[in-house]
Structures are given as structure tokens and as C-alpha cells.
Length: 190
Image (tube, rainbow, N blue to C red; front, side, top):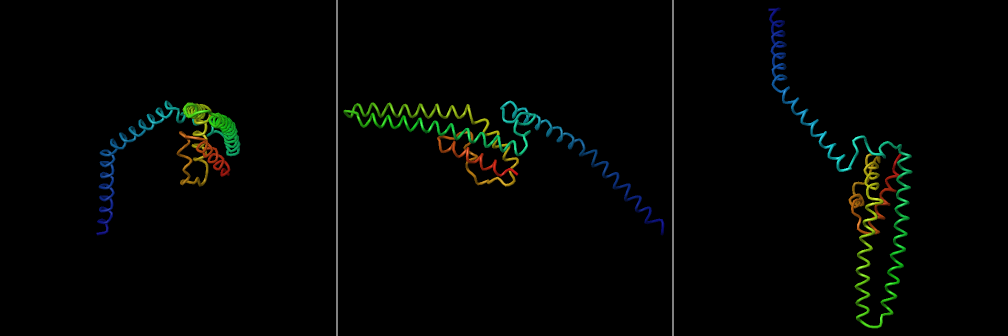
């Protein structure tokens, strides 16, 4: 009787070992295949990101900065964006003032209509140039700074709607919101 529990224990260990080995043999190939697929998919994702210039494989320039350096860089960028916006706004206001003055001094309705058409065309052209200039000078850097700040800020405000306009702000107000959001997040760095 005293030998029966030991035999049972040895038998149980032997059956459990056999079940584990069989399960590992059967599912091991599946697990290895899934791990290979996952590694391949991650590699493809990284390659696509790099090709699209979303994130370089070695990390962004900003990911290598300390919190203090990133904060200074972001505040400097936001300040430069604000200066650029102020210059553009001043030019825009002066152009509109001159156009309104010309319309007030128009002698007849035909001349007013021609001035109105010219003002509308000038406004649309100016808006396109302004948007294109933002894309060239500020868009990429603002997106990169935003993404890096989002990884570092302890509690970014998820309800902040400014983050969705970084890529396509439509006017001075939207571009100002980008500067405001970057500045706010930079000040939250600790």
C-alpha cells in the first residue's frame, strides 16, 4: 500500500510530461509560424513607415533630445510659427485695406464688380500660397514634434481637437492652434 502513492505520482508525472511534450510538438510549429509572421509584419510596417517618411528606422531627431532640449526646441518652433503668422496676417490686412479703399473709390458698378472679382481671385491665390508655404516650412516639423511630445507628456489632453489639424490647418486660426498646442505640451514636460 505504501508503494501505490509513489507509483501513482510517478505515473502522473510521466503522463503530464508526455502531454506537455505532445502539446509542445503539436503547437510549437504553429507558435513559431505566428512569431515569424509577426516579425515579418513588423518589419514591413517599419519599412513602410520609413518609405513614407513617417518615422525613420533609427528614431526621429527629437527622440534623441532630453526633455529640456525638446521643450526649448518646441517653444522656439512655436515662436517662429507665430512670427510667420503675424507677418502674413499683417500683409493680408494691408492688402484687404487697399482693396476696400479701391472698391470705395470705384466710379460705377462694373468697376466695383471687376475689383470684387480681382479681390476674390487674389484672396484665393494668397490662401493657396499661404497653405503651401506652411506645408513646406512647418508641417513636417510640427507633426514630428507633436508625435514626440505625445510620447513624453504624462497626461496629454485627449479631448484637444488641435491635434487633428496639424497636417491640414486651413487658415491662420488653425495654424495658431497648432502653435498653441505645441507650446502647451512643451510646458507639460517634466
